[in-house]
Image (cartoon, rainbow, N blue to C red):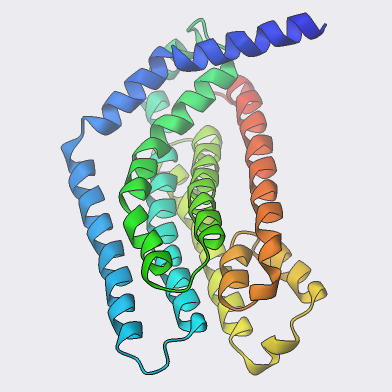
Length: 273
């Protein structure tokens, strides 16, 4: 049984590397010059926000750690918001458009495991925002380079940005698998993203109140239930003694993403094209 399991894993990895559908999806993204121009615009925006924050803090008489922490949280939120929105919208149409073009049935008949097909669609959709995030790394690392931010906090937030945009892309892929057309899929994905965004705003406002000084572990659990994707940024900006929760939060996202991908793999088999 162990030998068969190892062989199946090796076969799956080989399929993912040599997946022709993945190669096609990557070509569609990376050969589109408009996406590169958009990526340059996003990079310029993030660098502008980060540079403005550095100049503001440097010229301020109170050059405190809290100011640098707040700046890093702001740059992270801007980067994360843009990347998550674009990744979600791209992933929300990868299956529905194939159905509208009457090519989805052909992909299902390809000699590939269904999970390989789902991963190819997901990676193809989110790959361009991964590259954009790499382009924005100078903006995310600037508070560490010139401020008092710890390297571990910066690396955790960078990993958080990559993981969270991938999770939201998985949500877009979920809507693409169950929706009848691209418009319905995009609307469902945007509503889901806005729901998380609204939860983020509410939590940020609540944590900014004076009573946040008495924020305890029970309140944190309720915060996770309301919006499980903002806690790491909130913990860095306002609850510095709770940064140890970030790895657990990222593990929660990874497990949730794996469950969604497994469900999508099954769903594409029984949902009518």
